[in-house]
Length: 234
Image (cartoon, rainbow, N blue to C red; front, side, top):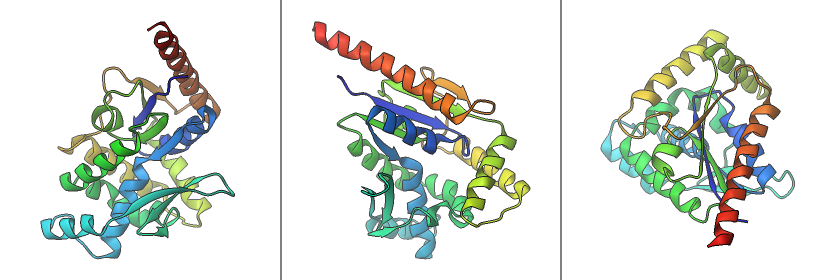
């Protein structure tokens, strides 16, 4: 069977990462969390007191930045490592969330991480989520999805995620943060968040998690079958 690249883009709090993970598991594909990469880079800047506005600091950060993914054999979940340390919990805190769009907007950071992402997906058979996967990282992806949801729904979901980690953040603060991230992500000069013309939009405001995963898996299987059938005839 031919393997494809599935690019899932969309706004913060739409459930991109959890959806992408479930789609990858269902198809037996590799999941690449581009958002985790930008979060890890943000944590690196914060921990080393480096400013994204200072070119020297940016250069220093990128020289000492090592992001990798490792599959946990017990949980079968992919885990994010920053310079050898497991950081999945730390990169999901509001400390990182409040700064990640600022770091992700730095051209040198985007260029470095996009190159890494393209190398990771070169062999296909991957599901990659982010904000510019279908437009910049893999514009040739066979299946492009754009996920959206209304602001209230996204804020409530994010608050629930934070509560699970023991972090209580007022809903209004989360809504403000999401709205600001939307603004930065959509207006930055490098890899802005856009819905490309050939992307399929899925509004997750009023559908279940299983439904959104099912829609993507069904579409992926249709494309895989079509690609495999075409390859078999040529």
